[in-house]
Amino acid sequence: MRILHISTRLILGGSQENTVLSCEGQARAGHEVHLAFGPIYGPEGSLLDRVEHFRAPDGQRITTHILSHMVRELAPVKDCKAYGECRRLIARLDPDIVHTHSSKAGILGRAAGWAEGGRLHRRGIVHTIHGLPFHPYEKGWRNLIYIKAERFAARRSHHIITVCDAMRDQALAAGIGTPDLYTTVYSGMETQRFLDPGVTREQARQRLNIEPADFIIGTVARLAELKGHDDLLDAIGPVMRERRQWKMLWVGDGWWRERLLGRVRELGLENQVITTGLVAPEQVAELMRAMDVLVHPSYREGLPRTVPQALLSDVPVVVYNLDGAPEVCIERQTGRLIPAGNLAALREAIEWMAAHPTERAAMAALGRERCRAQFSLEKMIADLHAVYERILAERRSR
Image (cartoon, rainbow, N blue to C red; front, side, top):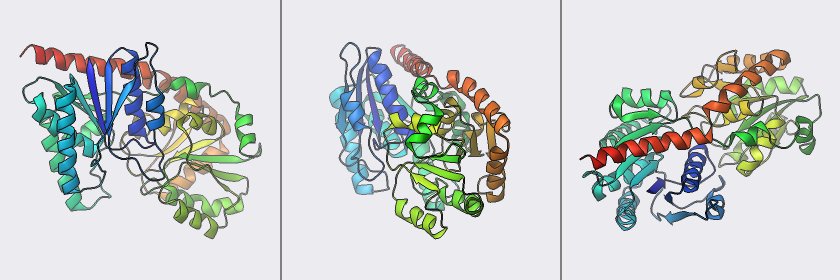
């Protein structure tokens, strides 16, 4: 099977990691895999090096293609050119499956795939919703454009995969597609890396100069808008000034780094906020092992990969109760679910975690067992293959 994946950018992020792992798994299974994406820039990092160095046991590689005009923001001229690039690439490769990821690549890639044979069922057109582009924190006119574009693209899809049930439900509520168009496939990950990162909790903390008695509140997210770092500072900054053994561990980098670190200095927390900067995905498991609790107060996600990754690492979670988070964080079973933006509830949940180490450990243990199977990489690859085969069988029957 020849498979073409199209993504907007190949930066370090949950959607991109899911896409790369899908490509690797399919290449290992013997398929011819291509990955197309727009230019990579900025402080978020890149997965390109991993893709270019990948080799399956039989020598199979992932062939990459740069779409020079594919950008994340709305840009009509570049978008038209990127659409043309996608059409030419699809016509040249003649893939059996065109599988798009992220909103911009999803809209342009599906339109191109439909025009280049998808309409006649010569190839299967699949899209994965990792997170919807419209949300309550976006301008109304932008949301209107995004919803209309997603409805347009859904009519040019043979199937839509969602990384959680919540994404399916939100898309359907916005009039995007019909229920029979959707399948939920939880985002697979390299679970063993988190189950056994090769270091103990003590070793991980020693490498960060963290004292044994310190209470570590971790985040793994880009330092960017809507990721919730400001909420963390507002909710527990005053508490941390009184409890000097409380520390934050921020894993990641982004455009808001200097502004956020400026706030840290203003609050007098320079010695209590540890920043790692940009780290390779392979290092995240070790850093998580140093945490006592992972807090993810993000306002916009599909299903945040960092939440199951923390649970696999034996770390309980505190998460805003939106999108796919409740499908992993079960209130007072695997963590604490907090109403989005409720700083008093966020502070209370973190204080509760600090005061209840026994319950905290029990939550982590239960979450670890649940996520071990739910987020298996092998299961994701098998589920994707089943979708592809179903589409191709329908195509052959026409």
